[in-house]
Image (cartoon, rainbow, N blue to C red):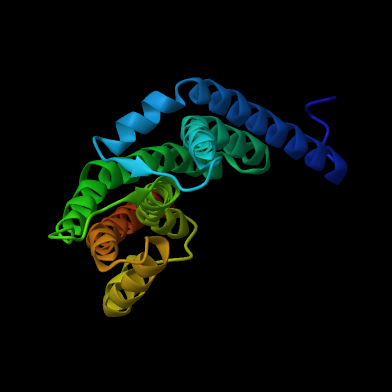
Length: 241
């Protein structure tokens, strides 16, 4: 195909289909490799917690689930690359720079969200809930419920840590301003706690643990938008001069 010739709608759909298939193939390969080490991965993420299962196939399904989750996490850079590669040809030079920077920042923030969930939120939540196992009340944690709780935290924090990126991109395209964000901070606090309640497992500790960093990320988003506005004004002043 001639690279200088504009792509038709069918060409775009064909390219999108090809990229989706490549990503799915990578997820399948990564998950298959992780399945070979699913037992070790499961042993690592439980970190000494004794789990049970109550259905004959539940143990096997837990291995499949942990392998798929690990495969998706490992495939995140590939997914991001294909999203950026699909969008870049349709953008201007300035928009390409914004998208490439946004892609890198998205990956870093997603990793930061996963790290916060794993090293801070998850241990604190498990420690808090374990204190209720006293006397004749013993904790027998089902493996499916445990994985749902863990993956919910990881995915919830990984996605909500994208908040500064969303603000920065909207600010770069003049859709959002730092003044608007500052003036609506009190409403943002309410929305953040609602989002934390939706994006985390149904317990107060997980919700608070998500809301606190989200409040910090909101402030970081304001700073990023303000920096973008300052740079834009300097460029406009230089051009006007």
